Length: 275
Ligand code: DGL
Image (cartoon, rainbow, N blue to C red; front, side, top):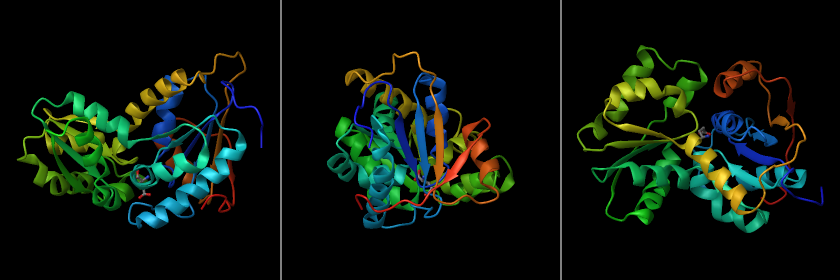
């Protein structure tokens, strides 16, 4: 295990699969000086239909792969992992841990004028009530309306972001939120930023969409500065990608999520270091 952790150390990011690359994309745009190590647990995806216990166990084993690589900060880029595993990760890892829920909730709570916020996510994230809790911890007066949109994940994976099937699914899923008076909708899943335009169309132009990936990048910047861990050195930043399973279609889908080419991906077996 690398012994010295300082500003030049990489940021570790994990997700249940490739959706967390939407967070990596924001980090590459906004924190271009930082080195990144990404782990996608593609062998065990999806997390969004699994129980809390299993998601915590998987999240700890992902951390157990990344922490020994000498990372300075751990990012749970997966909303479902963030909903269940942040306390366990903070207990076990001994480093700053950032999830995607608090940043999204903060932005939504500050942006709403009607005091009504919508949240969409995987079935497990919505069932956990984590976004509702995070928003109401900031402002207990805000009413939160939540609904799961499970089909959005396979639609984004298949590249069906902007067609009639996705449009129909968005209309059906978002119908219960339409009459609720929400003026902000949190995209509480790694995949949903790819469906932004059909979600906006279905919920209406007046509703502000909060992209948790964008808010998380801003949060990470703040945490690095606060802990004096920003990379101020001159070494060229690097990005490494690891997956627990590499399928034939993976590279194409991953590049869609990342918005650019990926040169090298390594397949890894991860143990249960913490899990
Ligand atoms: N990464 C998951 C999330 O943000 C979506 C995919 C899955 O279900 O694992 O909740």
